[in-house]
Length: 327
Ligand code: ADP
Ligand code: MG
Image (cartoon, rainbow, N blue to C red; front, top):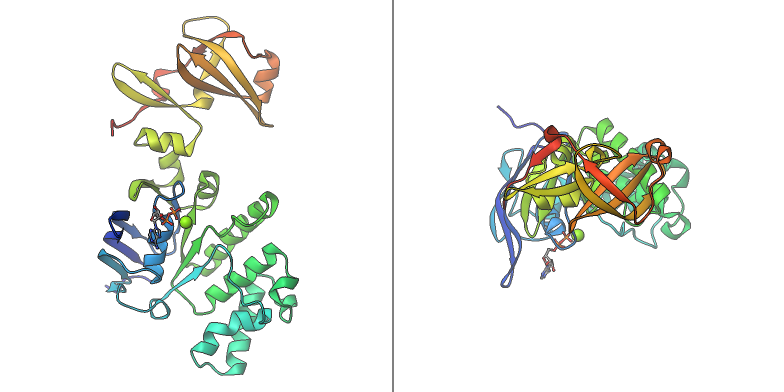
């Protein structure tokens, strides 16, 4: 059977820079048409992984297969992948139209064909009214749309995006996030999006691949990674969890399942900080040296206002404890 378009597999891929290991034995199947976020803290190897897929970096060992064929030895333009960079990297002296048409020009495509194609893509990203502008006459969000059109013009089967939203202000970031999601669904391409923001990864992904220190720590749907973290690192990185240790075992407990009660059994806690987050309130507690956070709705909070220095009782249900591996 022919592998489907955009079916990508990394097989035991490693990257060494001298004696340091940037990516260590990375194996992952990226299913066709999925939106995958490569998530993790700065320096964990996300960009290096993406660059190896794109062909901007060689692999030290391992193999990368796109639609069943090894692409490791191919030039970036021959791979069937396209990359959109964090800085957009638009050519400042070329118009929007020429920026988008650029790689078709490099491939020797005639002027009418490449301009028609460039206009189609500018329409797709809602930038068809800006064809004659220069990049510095555009806002950050508009530049990003142009960079997207430029990456898509070679009809890649996999689009690689390295921190594509990080240069935008928070309001625009959320709008462009929805826009990326719409584009991915419309085009049906495999998107691999690098980010260090767990919110962004949760909002966008069909699948999250969470990296830590050159290796994959956990991969799965946003729901799986958030609700069934495998390790303490995953629970802490995804946020919204307390780490509870008992009998030499460690458990993740969602902060919104950590309750403050006025009567009944529980753990004693001292309120250290109260953070108002709009729809919810996070109360940080010192429980005999263990730091716990209880998240509650603003309604619950205002029913019994809690202040710094208050003594409280903390409760949770046994079924809300999720055991973590000892790694
Ligand atoms: P991330 O994108 O997750 O922040 P990177 O993939 O950029 O991380 O980097 C992973 C590790 O590899 C880092 O320790 C970084 O310093 C190192 N690294 C990346 N590129 C190079 C390079 N060209 N030469 C040497 N070390 C590098
Ligand atoms: Mg990076």
